[in-house]
Image 1 (tube, rainbow, N blue to C red):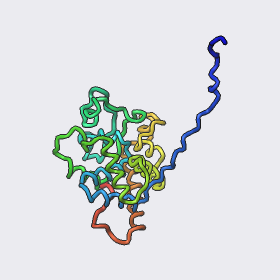
Image 2 (cartoon, one colour):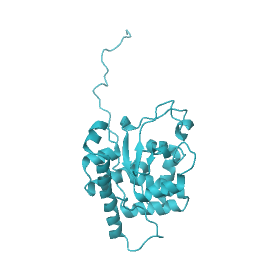
Image 3 (cartoon, one colour):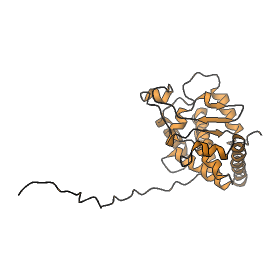
Image 4 (cartoon, rainbow, N blue to C red):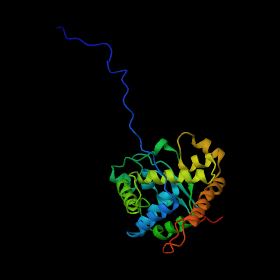
Length: 238
């Protein structure tokens, strides 16, 4: 027979089955504290990393690229912004050939920091010469957070995403305004101008204080005794 070509792909109308996505279950406050206690068994750096992921809700690459100079200790804020390819000298980019990063949707933002996390960062990193805050790769960050969660009996692989989802859920429960949630999490469905037109830095602090207060209230409800005197989160000074 004569060999030829068909004009239309016979598989064009066949839809690929959608991958089944597992629901991300947010952590309770006592689960988060169990994760912190697990991290304490290793090194203070891992405790700081754990609290940092829990409080800021940053994405994995964002955490790996944060620098000391991104922290405003006076204003109690941390800046998240893309690092251009070829211009970024951070630890992560050096490990991966200076590829830089742009973040998901490339949304720069500022995130409020609690007094507890600020003091921890100051005590651990101030005065040190380092390209990045934690000076470890994204793989090392994920492994450290997963290890702490696993030892605390928390299931799930995407550790940073669990903390991010937890912050979003807690802010929702605490009554934080939707615009403030978008601004803190850096969701790309609103432009940066739109986000900061609706929420000023002062309002961000006010809104973020709601989730800090809510988490403290939850700890009071579920805790009957302190755990080694270790306090995970305290309200930021006004």
